[in-house]
Image 1 (cartoon, helix red, strand yellow):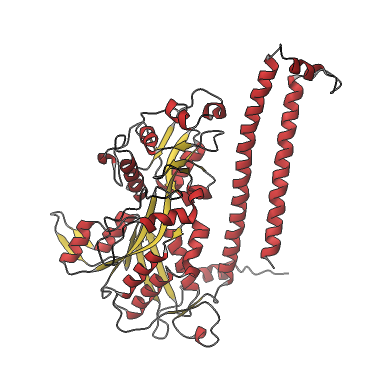
Image 2 (cartoon, helix red, strand yellow; image 1 turned 30 degrees about the vertical axis):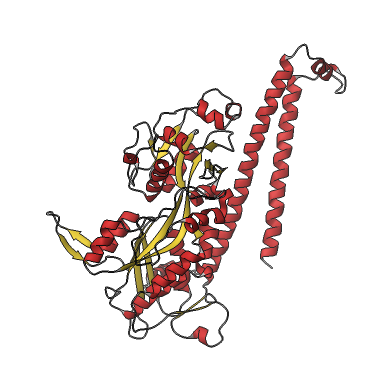
Length: 507
């Protein structure tokens, strides 16, 4: 039998371009750039939109950092003499975890260029650690400042012990060195983290050490980017580092509990969506989206459950959209901005990536800003959520009912990975707790073994209940058996819950 390979045809299909632009079905496109933190959220929304329309769409977002996003948004080119050559934006929208600086905002104003800030999502910046057998670690900002400045270099320092009385017993040593992980390149996470330290403990963290880039102590370790920081914390025992909380949780890192403005120690998970959202609700925001946002402060806001280090991601858009020549592309940009505040599009960013949507008052402010953007003519995109038997099949409709098989399978894969990640997290937590209990039990056993004058100990070892003398070897064997039994119970329980979950979610 003769077989004909289909591989060339398969490769040809992969290499074929997407539907060509023509008069009937032009490819509509928008392109943004800026902060990396909410990039997965933006990409997810763009994928949903591109899969939900009849029209061919091409939407991209370049994750390059807040500073580059602002530079692209300003559009200035500077020659060797420092002369500004042009001021046409290089992106259709910019994005950053900080507002456009006052100097840049004033520059645009001096050129008669108006812009709007659209707050999109809130992200918690948190600290994580890898001190062995320490599942709960309390720190305040002054201690953190001393640790990152290498004034405190050991986890058993008396000031750390004062907030964590059992840490020496948990570690099993009177000394354990601290490794500090920090970013090198300009980072909005570094800007938020260092500003928080200065606001809450300026005696340990002066204003000179605040910014996207910092002159760090030479004894600190460079861990640039979220992936590298995760590796530093996970792979080097005793490391402390800062990272967006959602990323740290997804990697199963152990979060440090920080002291907030109300004096409560808590993790960002304990703060939850309400505690992170409270930072924006308590902040003094401008009354209009087209005003200067550079003084907006979300750090160290009051509240028992308020998380102290919160960054707000913004979209930057010019009011005059004439730099986007095609009216249909302008309409697509407006549709994307609208989707950022639609629950069907923005809520998955919380479930999948750990971001918190902004409070309703901030949503209202942003939607008023979108209404300021000029689009006098051209098409208008609409959204179909519930089935619209006639209108849903019209042009320029973004429908949540229109999906592709590949997108469905990707969603299923994401859910399966999330399930496995959750199982892994719980197993790691159980292992940490069991290790702590074993260490405590071993200490009790050692005490019993050395107490030769203890009648209870003598009775236990020679009572005959076990038919022979009860030795430390017997004790170790029983401890090991208990550990294995506990692990078995935990694994079977997780497997059972996962099976029940999959059964009900497939119905």
